Length: 190
Length: 190
Image (cartoon, rainbow over all chains, first blue to last red; front, top):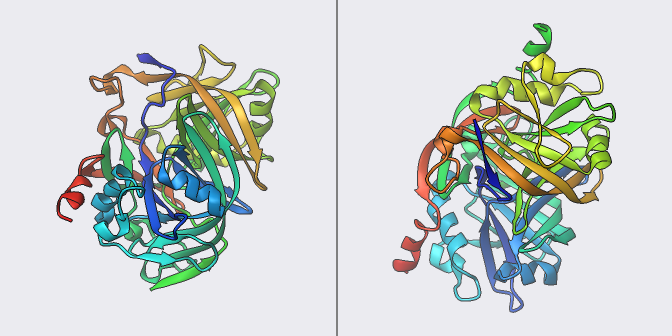
């Protein structure tokens, strides 16, 4: 039996990401976001959401670019830290002991210790209310070499991304199926 | 050492969702998407991406609404099925043996067997290239009652959502931290 919960953004498990920017003075900053992901394959694009009140909001609009860095399980505490405090008041990279690396293609820093990063130029943003959706075109993706398969895609079990849902962080667990494959069984048996 | 992978939508683990629509004749259809998630809290909104070539694309634009249904681990095969075949050629609900339930608030069906569903009206869409991003305002969320905590939020370990990444499906695993909590340790020790 389903219960109606009303018009609510009921929390769903979502991967953790960090948005990287430089502020007006060039200080590197990053903020944790759970509402982010790939949204187009050609041109390759990523989207994420920020509140206007955040320090990163103005930075993204000013420089028209950003990075998105994907943390591994081992970075869960640091990721949470980047989601609690504001770059307005703190040098978060310094406190977290993480390295801000200048991107090759855009004026934004990424997290050197995180295994997978995307350098993006802002191509669209849309104010929805409390949050604004930002869309960036991926100019380059970079991944720690040892995590890649033979097609240069990250092996999920090595990348070890994690998700945020209802106030908690969860590692990924067992492999439960093969994409674009297992579903064919249903067609065969119909 | 990071390897540059170029301008590519490198796959990252992302939760599985099904977009539900009625076609022009009123036949229920659903399509699997991995590029979806909450994008605004007030008003509550969800976004997802579709290619123009999909059967769902026209249906969303025609009725200006859709549902998003969150599957549990046990629905991984069905979810994959809904991502392989087109509603143009098949009655996917019938073949998968799942129930299309008419929404209360919008002209779109959700998957009755899936534990968490959102009824949405289309508020924005933006063509990025091969994919279009659709944003819908959540008019109602519905969840299986037994999965809710005392604040009417789904308990992740009971909801059992799963993620898609680099061609495989993964269950969620161990809880590795508390959100808006663990990160405070870094500030205390700085």
